[in-house]
Length: 240
Image 1: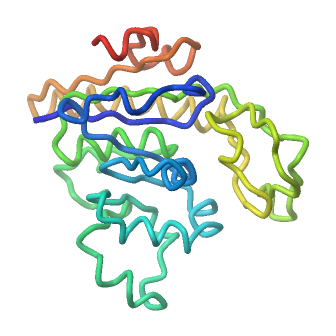
Image 2: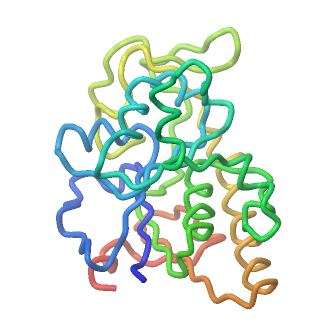
């Protein structure tokens, strides 16, 4: 079986050449709003994951198109993002969609251990659920600038982009976020770090309970999630 590569969207991947990734060695999982890069460059992952229902709802039409994209084998969503009864076309693709809350009900799945999560940690859990035993991560920087100058805080506490971001320090391409997008505050030092801490414990527990040897390795030249996940310099990734 191939390894699974989870590609985060952090700025550590700015100018990264995705074409150099060996698709014979890796299946690839992409996250969140990176579809804007994929659509522009005609380069698509094998799997798509988004756990943030606010971002999903803000981009529902575009994400629905990913479900129908023949390059993408399967998608992972939050139940709160889905409107089956209103979207008959998507119902035709139900076999292509895994829902976080439904996987949590499976006592044999690592999702049964789920508590706090971010889209990145969900992606790794989903990879394990799909049967991958070697998972590598790039682009999970966790060094967010929480509120950008181009952002306004909405009454419900979510954020919205109110003008074009010409230089987005949080992501690997500047047009990752666009005017009109609604999203949650990143909460990098709380929600994200907690999710990775718990992920490390979940993998350890899952390995012990099911006599598995699932290995998760992170590649990043920043501190990233190195407190919880074995981390090597990004320069070593293509030669691993």
